Length: 529
Image (cartoon, rainbow, N blue to C red):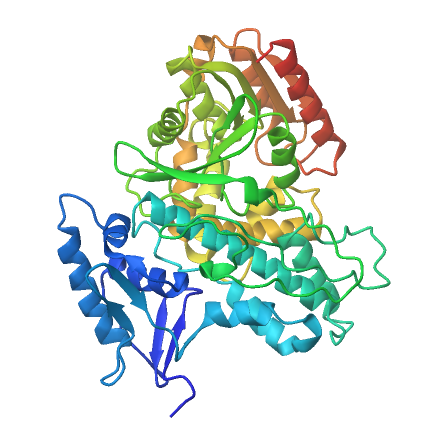
């Protein structure tokens, strides 16, 4: 008999293996989510709380819970070994003789770097590269979604820590070290040494940062690792630990429902008067905040404002399986977030197609929008303005996207990365390639491109009554400068700022990024927005 009769994998899709054979899980996503939640939290859960997390009226929550537990017992229990323990008040998963990948990673991270082999760390990096409980989004209520988002955030932190240990491991080969250092920088740009930093000596190891949070069925009680079980941080192996900034720790993620039933994930961070950013291609509340592309810009806003962002339907933490990916739906998502947070009056930031969404919202709700900040936008999509040749090219890209977006070959996604940021460095482009793959499905990526082609708010420009600033890169490879000029010309008294850049998405090391931030800051100050 193997040392572990039962093995459970929480990274990637939920998997249960019994004596070397994978077990067929219940078809019910709620039942699978229930098992994952019990295993990951590792503590007794009240029946009432489980009913609230996964079932609601008009369902019969108690009966649904009993049915799910009966199905799960067939998966994890042995004839002489009950692992799901339930009484009239609580349910527990007994993992005493079960191997769980999450627990293995936590245990290894409590060890010193020198006590772990390079092979062990590489195995952990591979596991943490998978999405935690992939496919279980939307299986529970908003509290379950928040718990899942936090667990995935903590998994991202753990991955950054593993990459750090690989990059600084004494046994790492000179050929492999640059690869792990690059991945570490991409995963944790605030904690990893900058590319121009002295790298003749490996940076000192840093302790695993404490993680304080409250999750469904669990009180916040100090440092907690992945999955909610408490653990001591790994001791440092160097005398001068790196200070690791963790901006996501202050981010608060929530969910709201749009009238068609779609769940939209939103996040707030910072303090002060609100500034709301409309969603754009593409978003992910967890990944984009700490990214080398968006991170520094978002941090600059959050130092002065309560910065509100949300993931567009079809991508990020919002629902992916949606029937409606249309301009009207994009506007309704923005309305739902503003209403959920009770934002009475605020400046609205739009980037790329988010500019058109912001314009439409400002016309519909002039009493709520105190100012419009439009960056790299357009009033009409490619189906309205592009030549026949350009439209044919776009249609071909749609087909390529559906066929290749989700593959390991980044060439398909690189079509977008290269036109979004032609002057970005290799590390930034590689990060954006992978970011796109993790942010949405191949089908949705194609649907987004199709939907953006039909956008048309040209007739709404003259109805905007709020102060507006339009910023656009002069040599934008994605959205030509004339589109930005047309937006500024159509909005009464709009201020237009051309930027010396070829990038559709500005990167923080180019001068145009600072010019953009300074112009927006002056605009907000001049109008006291």
